[in-house]
Amino acid sequence: MKCASQEWLRGMALLFLSRTVVSMAIPNSTYLGSMLEKYLDEDGEWWVSKQRGKRAIAESDVQAILHLHNKLRGQVYPQASNMEYMVWDTELEHSAEAWAETCLWEHGPGGLLPQIGQNLGVHYGRYRPPTSHVQSWYDEVKYYSYPYPQECNPHCPFRCSGPICTHYTQLVWATTSRIGCAVNLCYNMDVWGHHLAKAIYLVCNYSPKGNWWGHSPYKHGSPCSACPPSYGGGCRENLCYKDDGVDRTYYPTKETEENNYIEPEPPRTEEPPPRVQPPTAAPNVDLENTEAGAKPEMSQLVTCETKLRDKCKGTTCNRYECPAGCLDRVGGKVIGTVYYEMQSSICRAGLHYGVIDNEGGWLDVTRQGRKEYFIKSNKNGVQSLGKYQSANSFTVSKVTVKAITCETTAAELCPFQRPASHCPRLYCHSNCMQENPDIARVVGTLTYSDISSICRAAVHAGAIENQSGGFVDVMPVENKRQYTGSYQNGIYSESLQNPPEAKAFRVFAVI
Image (cartoon, rainbow, N blue to C red; front, top):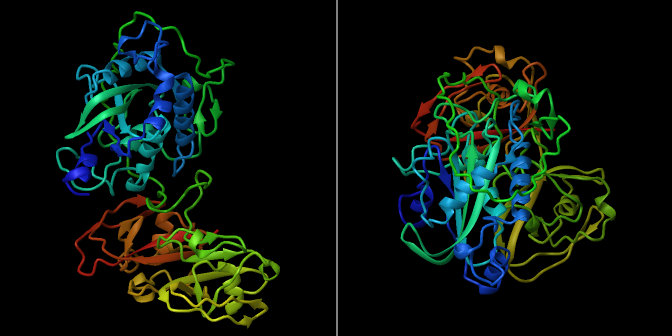
């Protein structure tokens, strides 16, 4: 990320309070109208002149924002032992409304900021529900390494280089249990030099505030195992929940004349918690639709009909698990021989080439660029089609398996190279934790220097357990200039600055 243009804009987030980037969608009055309709007065005027009793946010949006916050808080990885269930707070809503009506793209008001946390979002043009901003705040998890920021820059705006993740940490701050938001239509709103004619401005205020410097957002452990005593042992969807028979579903209350003052929290004097924490999921691993707490995997589970072009194009999308019975599935066409066109079924191409049989199994895919034509053939019970026009291609290969020692490094076994090659699936025996750390080093967290022991890095990352060992997948990567050490799963890893080769790897569980 650079300190220029819109990239610079996105980087401008405060340490304790953060905001979302502007969505530069193409203006469309029809979509905008549908967004604003529920916020208009009976006469069709915006609530700058609204009567008392008109709310700053629709009830449906309140429910959606609250539900999404609790859903996302309940699925953090690694799992949280003290994550509290979040409820709606009308005082926070009123304070958010007062600030949203200023149409200022900055945090405020200054007198309230010491007591609350705040996330801001703004967009214009096509309809976007407020929850789209909530999701974008949470998606900053890909820049965050638990328990402290390592991949993102927490110092903006004092330094502006690299992505930010303070929206995410506020959203999942365990002790932040109350939220109140407001939506406002702002005419000619100035967002870092961009003048938006009709901007939809979302302000969400949180209490107690989060993002305390030097603290992780939550404690790792079994869900609800470290809830405050006030919750009485109640737990709902991995969140500390006060199960006292009271229905905590939010119902809007009448607006009152109460002010927006929120009682300050007592000063925090405790020291930052020790950095003894289990590993995180790799920030850029696609964890969509993954159960909370599941270990990240490199391989992708597909169906007999899945085409390569239907899958993601990232570096973790090169190893696939195919089900049994694909030989008789006529729905998955195969185009080509040896080199297969991108619209081919991954698994049936594997059958055609002979790297798997009808019992299914694992295969690796290598993208090969454009080929001028594709030849049809009948091999291993699969009839492929021909195509005589240029298209992108891929090849398939077996997933080899290799047992390694505790000292084996990625540099000697799976060095990064171009074009990329596939590292074998590796088997680590048990008790590599006891290996001499001077001989079997671990350098980094999440992403490790290729001088590291693969098996000890796998224990450090949580891909395998020290007592049992097991299989792991390794993905060589490049361009890592800084490694941050940590203590995880009984292993201390080292920090390293500007290594000469800057080659690295990531390690994944095989489940």
